[in-house]
Image (cartoon, rainbow, N blue to C red; front, side, top):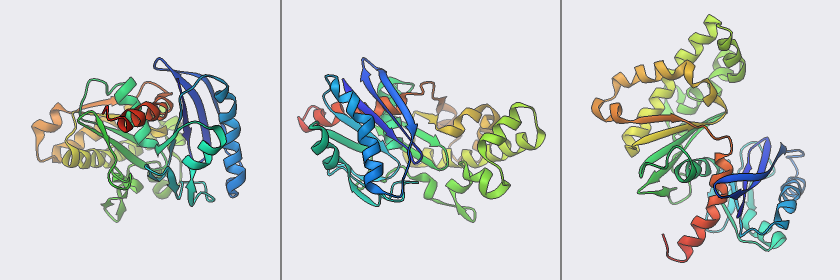
Length: 285
């Protein structure tokens, strides 16, 4: 059993992975994010009760670039005090357990590949749509994170007058339409025509992001998650319509696109970091 932690910019979730399921799950909002020690203490307080169980290690996903080897996180999204934090060393000193740190979308992708909808694919991509847009990449049944754990940051690629993230994430609604993705979703649920048009436009932009993934990694499948993913039925059609621009139509016709079904998948992926990292250290993968 391993502890999995999903650390977001506004909240934290922790739990223990046991036989592919999460037990003893807790989640809460993060407070006092401007103070490093206070935020770290909150994280430690959530982990402490779980260490009373017989666990082998701790895996944690964070919304930032990570030095995976050293477990250092940089400029964590929406946590101003976390500019450069040696998270691995801090938590290992506190709990005397091995700790492994990675990007949160990578953890989501590992979770889908190991426990979820990506199990049948050796080459797949996880795409997380929230306030930003990120992706994790599995090639040859292994996570590809790049030299600096920065692979998959497709949202930062130039697009129109800004970048893809501005148009294919929650930013699209707040920056251009003075609303939120949640409000637009609720209005679409009520049949509001303007909201439905917004989601249609969003789908074309997100389709452009999918095409970038296809041109770059040519995966068998994409699994979509994140807070905006619930609205997939409202942008699926326009997303697929945008594929008419794709230069290799037969390739994109074969692409399988799934919507995540497990709310604990990022926790499962974070917990899986422990076994994957220990296996790698022992030369088993």
